[in-house]
Length: 318
Image (cartoon, rainbow, N blue to C red; front, top):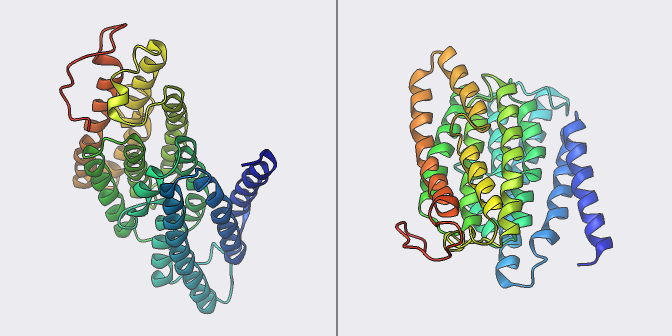
């Protein structure tokens, strides 16, 4: 793809996301989300491979369904309230549909089915975009309607995402799919506390973006795409792989690393709101994702002796 076309595409991605964050009108926000979807499609399908075309098609279809739900809910809300303002979401029915549409765009259970397949058909750079920048626009709108969303729904979606994200990632050997399930798990933590403490949700997504960005860049640098590739990455660059292992553990939320901070804030808020069983369930579910993060860190920096490219692999890798 030519440099001019790529510049125009990334400019469209940037402008559309900024419009969504600054918008106070549902129609303008919906149009900006559509611009964002159309801009990312060429990036997903730029690789000349059938899997890339399949990934872009799946992304387009799922985002179209989410956009239809979004347009339906904001139109219904305008009919009830007489305004297109984002802050006016007085009807529980429309706010619930709106929340489901936006979580579908962000890749949250139960509408997460598209994310692992789309990421697997994309490059690692595109995976980074889908895990970070493409979350910003829907999360900005979710934050805007957080006061009108049902706490029971957000807690349920959060727990399901945390559980299924960790469970799905344990069964994978492809790193792009593991990053997808990692994204689903993080979205679970973010959505879980959305109505209770929106600022903690924003801190969670921000720290996730900060930690996952260098992680994927290092995977790209070491040409690592599967768990089997990780077993020989130490001999390529010991410093890079050691840093990668620490980043993976931080993303897993292992104390005292940075990724533990948002989880601590969220658990503290849940306990403060007398939701201790929910906090215990979320902590237990996070152990599932911790297992596959530990597996990646183990294969990356703890398995081989320095300078050795061969070893007895004790964990399933293919």
